[in-house]
Structures are given as C-alpha cells and as structure tokens.
Image (cartoon, rainbow, N blue to C red; front, side, top):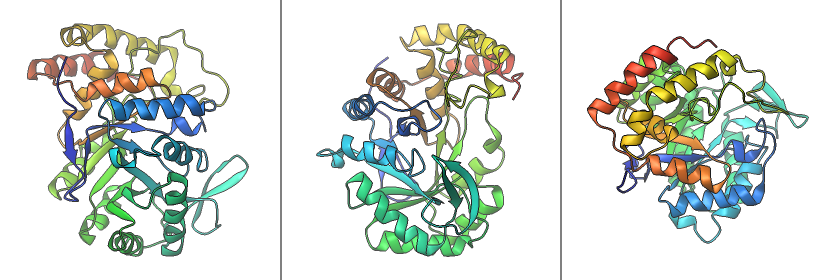
Length: 331
C-alpha cells in the first residue's frame, strides 16, 4: 500500500481536506471511559504528520474538553489543520429542547442566532484560533427555523469566523430546507457498512446539490475495526457496554467478516480497519470518513487508509462479505 493522502473539497467552499479525518469524540472522554490528554495530543499531532488535515471536534465532547485538547495539539500548527467543529448542543442556556445531561449539566438542542454567536466565540477561544474551517449544526433544533440558523452562520462566514457551513443529524425535510438556502457545504451523518440508511435519500440529495458528506462512526464505534472480538469486556461509562449492537453474536459476525476480507487486506498490506475505511470512502456521495483515535498508533492506522485505493474487484468481494455476515446483525 502506498500513495498520498486523498484530498477532497468540502462542497463548493474552496476548503480542501484529507478524505480521512480524525474524529475526537473519544478524546473528550465522555462516554468513552475518560481521556489521557498527553496521548490525545500525540494522536492529533501524529495524524497531522501523516497528512491527515481534517480534525473534527465539538463542544459537547466533554463539555469543551475535546476542543481544548485539539487547541493545545494545534498550537503552532494551526495552518496544517482543517478544523470542523459544531454548534447547537448548549449548556449556557435553557432555550430549545432538553437533550441529555452531562456531568450534571443539562444540555439543550438550540440553534437560535443568539446562541450561535455565543458558541462560536467559545469554540474559537478553546481551539486557540480566530477561524473555524467547517462549522456544523450538531443536532437539529425544532424550536428554531432553519432559515434563522443559516442566516447566523452566513453572518459568521461574512465576518471571516467560519469558512464553510455544515449540518449534522438531519432528516430529509431538514436537509431540503438547508439546501434551499444555497449555503450548505456539507452534511455529517452516521454511515458505515452496517449503518446505510442515508444511502436512500440524504446522500443523493447532498451529492446533487454539490455538497459533501462526512461519515461518522465509519468503524461502527470500533465494531468493524477487526480488533474487537467476542471476548472483549466493556466497563465504566463506555457506551458500548450495554449497546445491543455489541452483543457477543454480533461481535462474532464482525470477526467472521474480518476473516473473510483478510485476503483483500493482505493484498494491500493493510489492516482490516484500513480496508473498511477505504471502502467507506469509495461509496458514492461519501466525501470524508471520520475515524476516532485515542493514541498515535490508532491515528496512524486510520491515516494509512487515506492512501489505500481499492480495486473494483476488491469492492465487489467486500460487498459479498457484507451481505453474508453483516446484513444479519441485530441492533
């Protein structure tokens, strides 16, 4: 396996980034059993060294913790990174809809103009930068018209505080409203070999409008990484502990799937995770694949996927294995 990182444009924004992006939810620690700041910073810097420029974070990842760690990691190297962060999950106001509690604080979904203006300044401070490359609405707020939200984002873009506009966790109706504004550059949605719901509507709509799609949970929270077997035990606040997706039966299917595509991985001198990420990036409409890493080894493994080019025969063989093993997963 060799080659350069695949570089792609975020919609028509002119902002270009590596097709493989580093997702930093786990780096925030929340729902992932805590975080090691030094290891997290090393993972981010290793990603940059390997040509991964897209770094995805959000205020909600540890109530600002992830953004702060990203900011520390990028100190002196801001120009090497394309930062994507988010707005709309807030704990400074009770407006909007209550979504969940984190560390004893109620977090609301709210995308009003007043909140977005407040949030962007907080994110800029935590990230130690004066601009955000891609600013994404994290979860949609049914109490605020999308037109108001987009108008606020457009104002931030005119002011030079953000360079591109994205939306995450949208349904078809919401996506159509965003597209009608003419300002949407990208969507960020869950997509993997076992989470393919967006193939039917969101992917084609975004593609037709000239927008990009960032897939998150491309490895299905690690289930498809080839490293989580039937005997793995999850503990503490690890969200996978009680997730039916991680049943012993499903993990056995994932193991069998990994064994089935091992020949493809070996042919490219690649890991199973790298093949899964490369397959994701080869799907029509998927522009970027966000992959979590908590240490340099994981970061480098993910980064190498951006240099992997699967052949038509490789993709066909993988699709057969998906149908045989993963299509019958529960949860």
